[in-house]
Structures are given as C-alpha cells and as structure tokens.
Length: 153
Image 1 (spheres, helix red, strand yellow):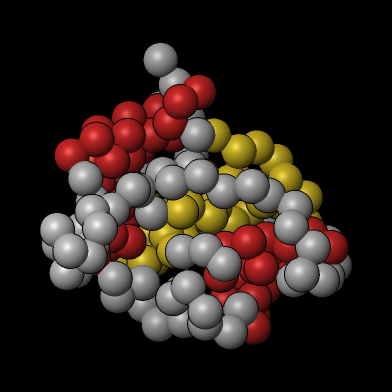
Image 2: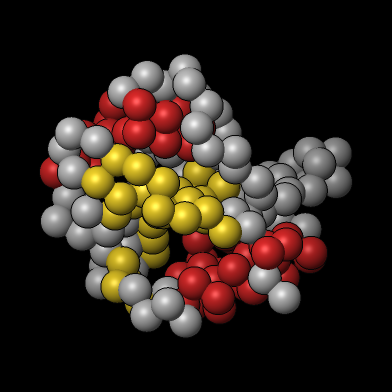
C-alpha cells in the first residue's frame, strides 16, 4: 500500500487574508506538481484535505490532475496539531492509496510514525507544495520518493 503526503502550498499571511489562502505563486507550484504527478498514471483512492482554506485549495488543484476513484474531500483530523492515530488507522485499513493534504507538524509526525514507529523522529523534510510517497504494509513503511516544486522544470 501507498500513502501520499502533501504539505499545502505557501499561503498569504493572516493580515492579508484572514483565511490564509494560497498565494498566486503557490497556485502555480501546486498546479505544476499536480501536472507532473498526474503524468505518472497512478490511481489514487481520493484526495483528502483539512478544513483550512490553503489545504482545500491545494487539494482542489491537485485533484484536477490526479486520477482518483473517490474524488476530493474535506475530512477531519488533518489539522496541524491533530492526533495522527486517526489517520494511521485509516491508512492501515484502507484498500486504496490516499493522498492527504495537510499541515506541519501533523505530516512530519505521521510520516515518522509510519516509517520508524516514533512520531518524534523527523524523517521527511516537507516543503510547501511537496509530495512524499510512502510505501509499506502494516509493519513498516519506507520513503519511495519525495518531489518538490523546485525539482520540476
């Protein structure tokens, strides 16, 4: 099984946009990432995102490019400080390969727990609009690849 972890694109500061939506450059970066990943011809279960505007916008842009069975959906427990156990259990019980669009430190902790069993060991260094593919089974996961917008020309 695989799980794809995406940190939302760069957002406007709160004093410019109280909901912290994506900057114009972030929208371009996410679109570039989505187009690149979409060319991989991978089938995804769905694109899940938190209730925050920046995650929703990131997921919607990615969703235009990715082949997904169940669509793009807002879901619970993907916020910056949410308990990772909810998604850990969902991933391990899933029949598909979900894309999770979220925030730090949540993504760091989830990746670390899947790979090492310890959420406090930082294994993946997420950047805005980056995607990490983790592959494994119930016992262990490893990093298959990480792609950042600056890697794509």
